Image (tube, rainbow, N blue to C red; front, top):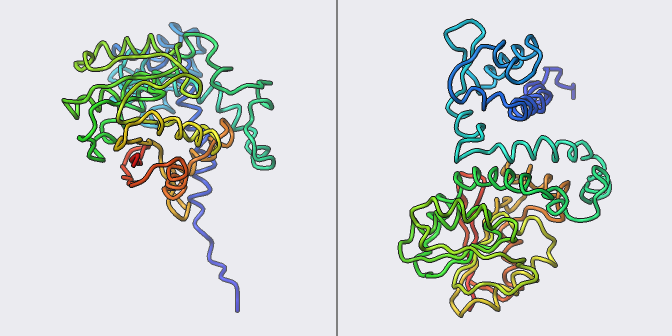
Length: 343
C-alpha cells in the first residue's frame, strides 16, 4: 500500500513550540511590575520603562506582545497601553483575586525545575536536589520568609476563589455541621462552604506560619464569626473536632503511604456518619485526560512526592482507610471533589 504523502497539520506542533514563550511573557511582565503600574490607568511605554527602570524600546516590544496575548489593550495615545479586565483581576497585587503569587512561584521555582523534566522521567523522582540542592520538601525550603509564604498563599487564594464556590455546590453537604478544612491556607473553601450552608461552622487547620494570613482574609468575610483558625501539622498534631474534613489540593502532594496515614487519622477523628471530602482534579479512568489533570500530574512528579489520581485510585485509598459510600463530582474548574463516609 502506498504511503499517504498528504502533509499532516502542523498546528499542534507550532502551538506547543510557542507555548512556553507565552507563559514566560506573562511571568516576566508580572515580575517586572507591568500590570501593577497599569492598575490605575493607561500609561505610555516610555513612562512605564522610566518608572520600572527598564529599557524603553524593549519595554515597548514587551507591551505589544502582551496585547497579542490578550493581557493588555492599546490606549488612545500612541504607544500607550491599559490592562484588560483579566489582567486587572488576576495579575495585579492589589486585587483580592490575584494569582500573582502563584505566577511568581511558577516563574522563579517551577520554571527551573521543569527544565529538568527529562531527568524526572528517567529517574521517576522530583527535582529538588538537582535544581536547588534542597534535601527537604519544597514547601519548607522555598517558604523560608513570611513574604514568600504570603505571596504563594495569595496565589492559591486566587485559584480557590475560582474553584471553591463550585466545589461546595457540587455535592450536598447539608447533613454536616462542623467542617475542618485541613491545610486550608487562606480559608477560601471554609468561607465558600459557610456561605452555602448557613448552619455550618468551620475550623481552618494549617501550619502556624499560614495562620496570620488566614485570620486576615477570614476576618474580611461576612461569615467570619463561624470560622476559627488553628495552627498545627496534620501529620503530627491532634486534629480539631468535626463531622466533615476537607482536603483541598493536599493529597496530590504525597505518596500513598502518607495518604494512608492521614486518612486513617481523619477516620479516627470523625464520628460515625462523618465524612471526608477530597478536592483534586481527577484523571479519567483511562488516564487519557483531562489535560489539566495530566499536566498537574507531571508537575507533581517534578515538584512533589505525589501524583494526580483517578476516582478508582482514590476509592482504593479511602476504602483501605475504612471509609465507604464514595461519590464524586467533576466540575468545569481545576478542581473536582470526592466524598466518602465513615460507617
